Image 1: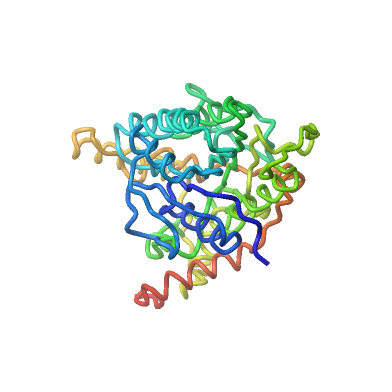
Image 2 (image 1 turned 90 degrees about the vertical axis):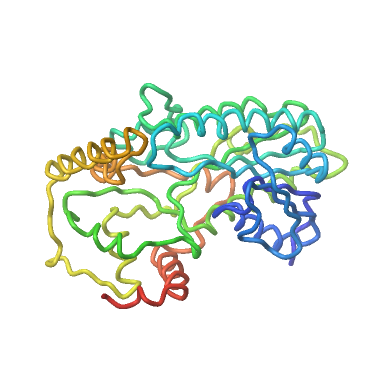
Length: 367
C-alpha cells in the first residue's frame, strides 16, 4: 500500500549514486507526490515520471529558480563532491558542502514553502581519521581542522552545524543522516583492482559498517512516517512537544549495516562473489612499514610528475585507513527512526557483484 503524499519533493543531487535511489523509493512509496531532481548532470540515472532540472548547488539563481518552480514541501540534500585524489580540492569542498548548503537554506527561506530538509552527511565527521574509533555514538563531538586530517570531512562537519542551526527557523525542520561506507547494485566494483588489494591482508585491517543502499533509504522512509504521525504534513499541526529521547528534527543519526567487517574480509567476499576466490594460503603478507615506504615513494613520483597538481592513488592516508578500526553504535537510529538493516552484508555484496558482472561479463573469469 502506497504511503500518503508528501506534497512536492525536491532531491538535490538526485542523479547521483545515493540520490537516484532515494528518488526511486519515493516514486514507489509515494506515487502521488510530485518529485523533482536538481543536479548538475541529469542525463544519467533518470526515472520515469520524475521532473529533472539542471543546476548547480553553487548557483544562487539556479537553486532559487528550482525551489520557486517545484515549491517543495520536502527537500533531500544529497549533493556533495566526490572524494578525489587531486590537489587543490579544498575550494571545491568549501564551495559545495559549506557555501552550497548555506545558499540552499537562504533560498528555502526566501521561497518559504519547504517544511522539512533531510541532509546526507558522513559517519566520519566525528573521526580524526588517525586513531581507532570503536562503537562510537552520535554523542561524540564533531571533529574539525586541525584535528580533522581530511578537509572534505571538515566541510561536512561544518555543513552539519549549518543544518542543525537552521532547525525550527522559519517553520523548517531539519535532520541529518550520517551514512557509513555505501555500496549498491550500480557501484563500479573494479574487481581487478580489488584482487590486487589482497596483498597484505593480515597487516591492513579496517573495520567499518558498510551500508547497503536500501538501509539508508529505509531510514528516510521511517523518518517520514514518524513526521506524518506527528501531523507534520497535516493542515492542523500539533503543538505537543516531542520527547527528547525520540526527537528526530535537529538531530544526527548514523546508519550502518550493524554488522562490521574487517576490510579484507569485505574485499575478499567481493572477489569470491565474482568468481575470484582467494585462498588464505595464497595471500602475500606485506608489512605496514614496507607499504608505508612504498606509499611515500608513490606520492613523491606523482607530485614530481604532475608538478604538484595530483596526488598518488597509493598514499600514506591509505595505509592509515587500512590499519585502524572504525565502528559505530546505531542504537539511536534504531530507536528514533525505527531503523533495521534490510539486506545482509553478504546479500548486498552478491547483488552488487551480480549487477556489475551482468554489464562486465569479461570480469567473471580470472584472466
